Length: 426
Image (cartoon, rainbow, N blue to C red):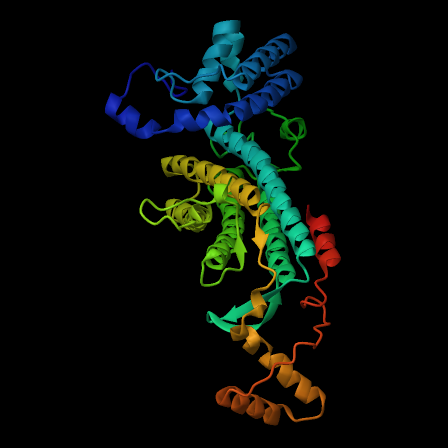
C-alpha cells in the first residue's frame, strides 16, 4: 500500500531503491506519527471536517495502534511503503471508510516533518539529560580530587601546574557550552509544522493552533513554505548540538588514553574496563575510550553530511530530503551510547596522587618561581632571563608554595559557580 497509489505499480527495483531503509527507521518514528495523527483526527472532528463520532473512533483506534507499538507488536511489511501507509491501512481495516479520512487536509510531507520533530524533541531532551549526568560525574570527581596536582602540557611539553580538579571541571564546564547548542536546536525543533501539507497549505479550514497545543509544541511554524523548508534544517540544528557534545567527549577520551599510558601514568582503571593483547601479557588497552574517541569524531562529521544532502535544494519538497532520517537517527543513538559508556567507565577512574614526585616535573613551577621573583620586585624581563639561565645550567630550584587565587585557577575552581551555570540551562 502506498499513499500515492493511483492504481498502477512501479518497478520493484525502483521501489527498493526509493524506499531504502525507511521501514526500519519508521519503526522508531511510528509512535510519533500516531501522536500527530491523534491530534489531526481531533482537529478534523472539532472543525467539522469529519463527524465527531468518526473523529472519536479514529482516536480510539490510534490509541490501540500506539499500544501495539509500545508492546513491540507493530511491524511494517514490505507490502507497505512506510509507517504512514501501514497506520492508515490499520485504521481502514478496523473502521472502514472513516479510516480513509485520516489523510484529509494533510500530506505525507507534513506527516514526516511533524513525526521527526516530535522524535527530535524527545531525543534532544534525553541527550541533554545524559550530558547533565556526565557533568554531575565530572563535578563529583573534580571535588573529590581537587587537591591532587597534575602536570599541564602545551605542545605536549611540560608547561604549568594543573590539578585533577581543574581537569575534570574543565570538561564539565565545556559541556555547558554544548548544552547551549542543544537547547538552541530544541527551540528550532519545538515549532509545529503540521498543516503545511505538501508545503503550500490546504484549502480545508483546519485549526493549526489546536494541533499545536494538542501535541505540546511551544509554537507554530506559521509560514507553510517555511515549515517545509525546515525539513533537513531541524535535523542539521540537532546535529550541530550533537557534534558539539561529541567534540568535548572525544577530547576527554583522548586525554584519558594519553594519561593511561605508561609514559604518563596519571590515571588507571580496573582490569575489567581494559583489554589485553593476544601476544603481550602486560597490556591494558583503553579500547572503550579509543572507540568513544573514534565514534565521537565520526559524529562531528554529521552536520557536514546533512549540509551536503541539502545544499542547493530550492524551496519545496525533494526526495533528497528522505535521506536525512538515515543520518541523524543513528547519530543520536551513537552519541547516547558514547555518553553512557563514558559515564560507566569514568566513575571507576583511579587517580595517581604522587605524579609530581618525579623531578622532571619541577619545571612545571618555572613560571610560578619567576612570578615569585617579580612579586619580590624584580622586573619581569630580568626574572625571565634569570630563570632561563638557571634552567640551562641545571641550577633551577622550583618554588612550589605560591598560591593560584584568581577565579577558575587551581586554587579557586569555582565549582559552585559552574554548577549554578548548569542549573540555569538544564
